[in-house]
Length: 168
Image 1: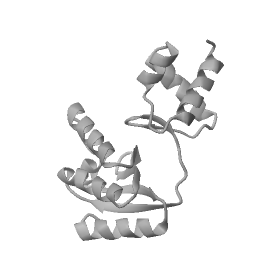
Image 2: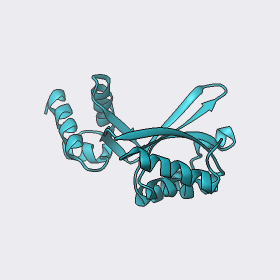
Image 3: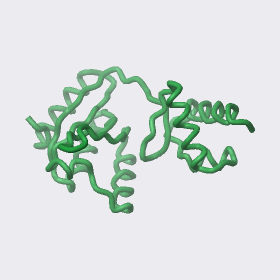
Image 4: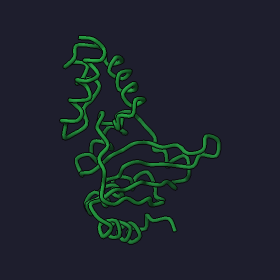
């Protein structure tokens, strides 16, 4: 299979997928190395494909009806509670951002939409011994949240405020 055919296959697989697809899965399907897939996806993204790399694999960006940025602050142990609060109310946690004094804006793509995805994120963080970006800024961070409508976003913001997570 030539390079363009393989990239077309990656594109079609991701467009048809209802969940993120890992580079390992794609490499197995296409009989190439994981690094080849990573390079192919980088080229597809450079050509304008709306492919998002997440901790759970690659997916195409979806357009939500409503989005908002919220600034929150909490301890690392409250992360699961914060994420569950957002997804339980119908939101998707698209990313996390911090303002680092040396590097400026640091951003991590999350795309967490369900309690199962929150659990996967938390488990993976613990397995890898990873640290949260918010640990660099005394717990202060921003999430981009998407939802089906503005009313859902308002409910999420109210719930974050009630829980004491909203940074105001």
